[in-house]
Length: 156
Image (cartoon, rainbow, N blue to C red; front, side, top):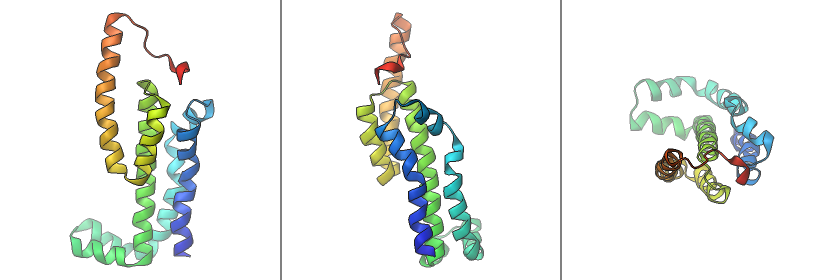
């Protein structure tokens, strides 16, 4: 059962990722990516995996040290729970990146690969996005000060 739940955690998040990457301008994508409720199914998987190892989980988070975390992740349900938590938080980060990218009119051709990087290695994807966001925010701020139109999302 643990193996199934481990796999299920990503399968539940995948449709949202696919929409943000392959259908970023489709109307429902923005509505779906704008909802934090998309992570609920993954969080239910997390709970199912975390409850059986709750004492070990509590020890790992209430008095964090490498040994207790290692003990937690050595347990199949513990590793699965950590994985489901990572999937949920990565999805929330990806959704925020998608919305910010749309707001700042970052090309979908750039955001798509960046979101894939975030699925695979979210800290690297987030760091790259934060740099890109800073540059793009300055450009958008400069355009808005010059009187050029800002906010045309139809180009994506």
